[in-house]
Structure formats: C-alpha cells, structure tokens
Image (cartoon, rainbow, N blue to C red):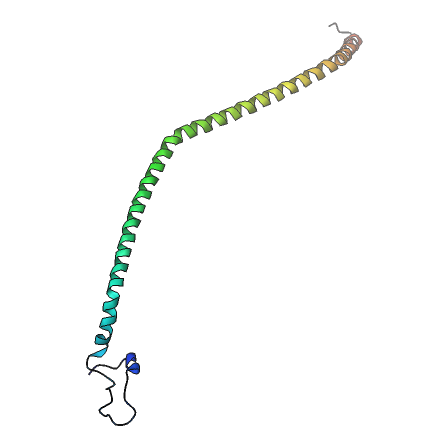
Length: 146
C-alpha cells in the first residue's frame, strides 16, 4: 500500500459512510509516480530545450571569455610597447619645465644682482667721502704717516 501524501487530499472519494460500489479508494496501489509520470513526460521536451539553451549559453560565454582574454593580452602588449614613448615624453616635459624654472631663477638672480649693484653704486660716493674724511683725522691726529 502506498504511503499517503498531500496529493491524497485531492483524490475523489465517495460519500461518508461504508464503502460501496460507487466509491473510489482514497489510496491507490500505483501511487503518485503513476500520477506524475505523464506530467514529467510532458515537461521533458521543455527540460531538454532548457538544457540545450544552458549549454549554448555556456559555450558562448567561453567564447566571449577567450576573446576578452585575447583582447586584454593585446592591450597589455600594446601598453608595454607604448610605455617607452610615454616615459620619454614625460621625461622631456619634466626637462623642459626644469629648464624654464632654471631660466626664471637665473633671471630673478640677475635682477637682484643688478639691484644690489645699483644700490652699491648709489652708496659708493657717500661711503668713499666718509672714508676719505676719516683718514686724515685718524692718521694726522695721531702723528702717523700713511
């Protein structure tokens, strides 16, 4: 005798009371397998189509992944080839910036030197007069000869 399942609730049975010739037993000897086999047989074609679609999608995914890997390898190789020229351009740019900064600093230093030279030229006559005026006093007053 088959074990009762939830599907047993939906089986047609006779009216309450003793079993009679019009009643259907609540459990059958074939069980749920015999009841569900036609349903699963009807779904077999859909199951097979679904499996085929999954296999096809997996094959497409493998192809796309292989293509992506090849493209990534090509991009990396190209980047390695381009790295030398990029480094050279960067070095040239840094060298030009350093040269421009050096030129600017040299111009600033020249301007400052010119300012100092002008200031010295402006102060030189007064300083020379002061020194010239103090020599005779220092040497003549003490009796020493220069």
